[in-house]
Amino acid sequence: MMFYSQVNKGKMMSLLKVFKDILNNKELNSEERHDLERAVKILQDTHVNILITGATGCGKSSTINALFSIDQAMGKSDGPVKEVAKVGVGVDPETMDIAKYELENMTIWDSPGLGDGEEADQRHRRNIINKLLEKDSNGNAVIDLVLVLLDGGSRDLGTSYELINNVIINTLKKSGEGRTDRLLVAINQCDMAMKGRNWDAEAGRPNAALENFLEEKVCSTRKRIQEATGVTVNPIYFSAGFKSEDEEQRPYNITRLLRYIITAMPSEKRVIVAEKINVEEIERDTSRRKQEERQEIDSSIGSALEKILGAAGGVVKDVVSTIASGVGTLIDSAAKTIGKAIGGAISTVASFFGW
Image 1 (cartoon, rainbow, N blue to C red):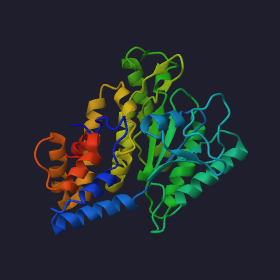
Image 2 (cartoon, rainbow, N blue to C red):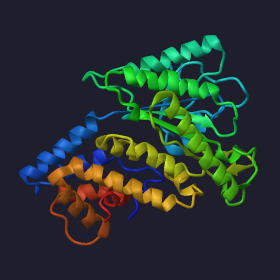
Image 3 (spheres, rainbow, N blue to C red):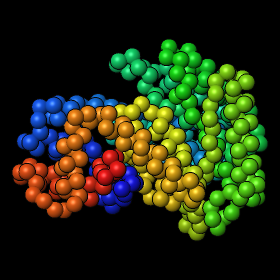
Image 4 (cartoon, rainbow, N blue to C red):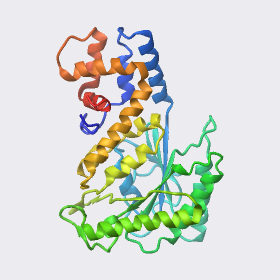
């Protein structure tokens, strides 16, 4: 089974809820109970913070919506509550400061990039630096990952490189942890890299000429950052797609971007991110490598979950497999309750183990 099985009308059952239900099973031995309680505590105490930034028009909102299922989330900024990841119309930025979208135990921070004028740029620099330097109560960096989006259709990326090289990398080097591996760079709107030429609109993917052009753009981006900072990044390209009343474009390579994000996370945080996946958009991805990327994500999540569960992995597998098969007698009424609680989400948990 694949991790992406669509359940609960497109939403996935919380693994925390699943684990808590299984804890009611009286047949757990002391080691299994200890490890499952530890897994519950890890999930309860773990919070993921992702900072996404890029110039106005690079598609931050579209990317957030394509990656994550946030229909129930509340979008918040320092001012009044605003619509979650609203896709902007026109040339003016919708927000001049960092906004945040809260998805229970994951927060997405959305910051404008540079290029909105010197006064605004100074404010954006200061806000990004402060957010990257922020520490939690344990002294660890609050931001787990910063994703910089480049506009694939733009020829002038000077302000984006200034943001990456002089603001983000410079700050990460000075953060005390020196973890520049927290930086990811992705080129959005790859369909417009050659002004729309060599994009197969029917298939929703680049032809050979555009693909070669994009690979060269990835190499030049990597080289430019490395020469300026000494830091090696491995950019990818994608298109978040869009929907309007009269037309739509399916996302391309969004699964690769998701894999890029998940594998950059500490193992215990990969599970948190995985629960927020926008299954519908991943299914609509037109990339030929989508299945391979999905398998890599499944493997990454499976390893993370096995590490978290420890000795409890076996009992989780037994309970879930029994419910999934629909046969056999569960141990007691508590286990029967588990079956009702998990429902269609069985495939979600089972997929972590390749059952």
